[in-house]
Image 1 (spheres, each protein chain N blue to C red):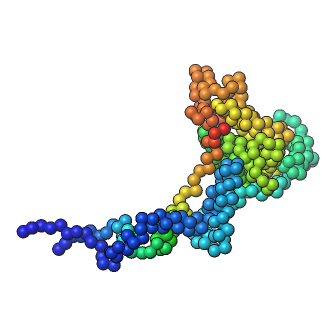
Image 2 (image 1 turned 30 degrees about the vertical axis):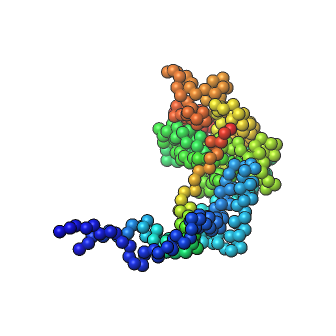
Image 3 (image 1 turned 90 degrees about the vertical axis):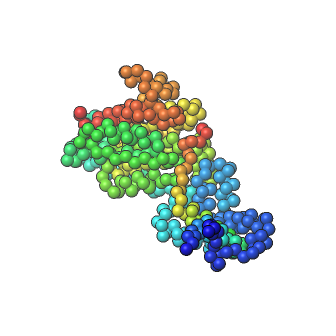
Length: 52
Length: 360
């Protein structure tokens, strides 16, 4: 019996990126950026800390 | 027996084809990343536009808005900004609104006191009645009718403002906590004010609060974030111009009249002296607007924080509270310390107690 760990997510992504073309890669990366931005916080307007 | 460690292998369907990655050359990843950023800019064109509009008014903001308009136009035409809109609708992300203030309609006048039913003002004087027709021309001299707060029907006090109100508001809430005839609610929003309703719409929020339930008194403190450029329908206006001051005065008057129309007395807390001389000068200009507009309205009391938190008008990080010098300001030279908040809150609460005859 061989205990072989399953490939990590990063390895799977690496493998996917290696076997797919540049267009799906770009689309996937753009989609990931969008998901992060949509789910992320809106941030705080830096009003009061202007250099008055 | 020899023990060998098996080499981890990917499943056949996940193994990279020989030479596939190498064939793209050194620049392949950079091209993919650039393409992804361009596509992401189109997918997020709405947010890029909003981010540009949130920047401080000035030429940098104008350039960013012009730059953001390019992906916005392409995304509108290609409908690539639709997925994000769907996602935001699905997640319930609030619409931050536009960057240009759409002036709210002037609030209705405070209900006039019937001449058949004279009431006693805070000083025991008889009332006179008048009406205000717009926020910019209001000259109301109506003495507000005030009920007598009780434990069963306590005085409803809302405390509203920006980050300056965080400490002050907590001190007001704490100071009123021992009196069951007063019920306070605190709402402070960091980095807000009356200059940038695209970031937070205080007129809208105040309208919402007044319609959600009766308020007897509202303590307000704005201004620390307001000494910046303003976006008007005619274009950007830098701080301090006559057009800027006129517009800001109109907005302050609008809030005061909206509170009056909602039946609430207003206690408008001015800005304290700041450590920075230039910032202090800006705050002094705003204080002049608050004080003069409050003076035109019987239902508005201006609380002079400048004199309360200064040493003969000059900035002081510490003031003597009777037991020695006590820090009244935070290290940024802007915000109040707890002792500073307590000191100013005591003045605000004294005004409220005097107006509503809340003898201790």
